[in-house]
Length: 257
Image (cartoon, rainbow, N blue to C red; front, top):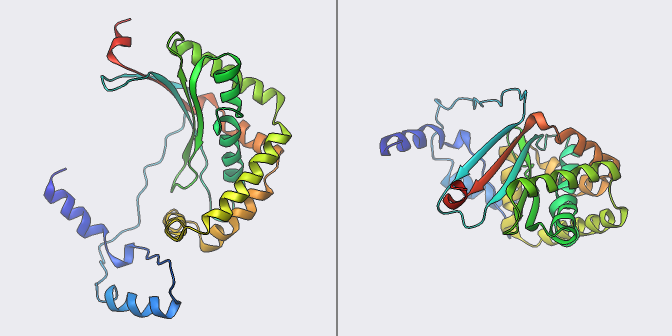
């Protein structure tokens, strides 16, 4: 892409009829309407703006693996991502369950499933994590990360990660940990209301991915209504090896071994 390409893309897509204005702060709807009409209303719409054409993920028929070497890598690690559903308008229950699943598996090094198993019980990893990004226009990913201690190989820490997940799927969720996480979720949602910029970003991101204002307002209630059975159902949905990509990231010295 050169400069002319960038300018052409901007002129085509950055237009009032392809934008969402979010205003947060000590204002009234009337003030916002007056000022937006004054400063934005004079900008003409672009009739060339077309509906977004989204490239769809092809069907996954087998697990994929990749190894990447880079001299900037200071610490090798294993990363695995699974295809996962995003937050859909009017149907956010599965996404909410996946938020809990990520927290249970890798939210805390001291109390999460991966943290306890790999960092404390077997001491094979110096860091573990699980993540889920539900704010996405199309399907998103659920990911796992494990960083081994120096004398543990990537294969060993990957095997340990798989073993921990398998045990979790067989034994289920610790109810006390689940209750604690639910309280933390509620507290986080309450504290988030104090951040005016964060509120604006929350609504803006949701609206651009097809959610509604009602969806955003319902999200805290939906999070609190999640059950352990729903989390395990979401786990069984996501942990499909055929829809996974496992990556090993290493420095050049590992490549020579």
